[in-house]
Length: 232
Ligand code: SF4
Image (cartoon, rainbow, N blue to C red; front, side, top):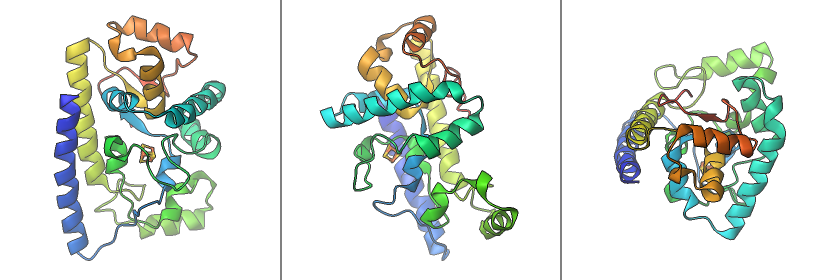
């Protein structure tokens, strides 16, 4: 948790400085309060970030979380690839369980680095588009509208903040690997649920973790990853 606090303290000034110089150059960002387009995407985070949230949930948040995990358990065996996981998640699973009816994040001070780092250089409508369903003309128009110096091509999200967020995520995973002998990243909400219901942070071996995942029908490399390299 100390490492997590430090990561948050490092990320905030980095993002502020980046944003200040970006806006000073006359360019625009489109992220706004209550704009929750990106909260319909699968959120990939590190386990320490999930532990921090699991300790704080209300009964209502816990119920929303349980509903989301149930939907994942029913659906995930049909997802053979990362592409189908991301697509099905966006289309069928509903938004992040921590998003409220007003479109606000209910865990905002503890939201993961992946959420902090996702800054949109295009209007919000683009955050929910399924690019595999665009015709080639629209796709070309979209791609030519992107600032390649700024975005993580071919997305419209800022590259530098994501790169820095991923660097901090890696330090969290490496610290966890050193301290516990295993490190975990993956679907943020599932990890929160695993901590809340199975107290995964108390588990001392990777083998025991795998048993818990199998018992809970959550063994999937698409959902959870035991390497210290963030692969998304
Ligand atoms: S944690 Fe918050 S910001 Fe991140 S996807 Fe969920 S609701 Fe959105």
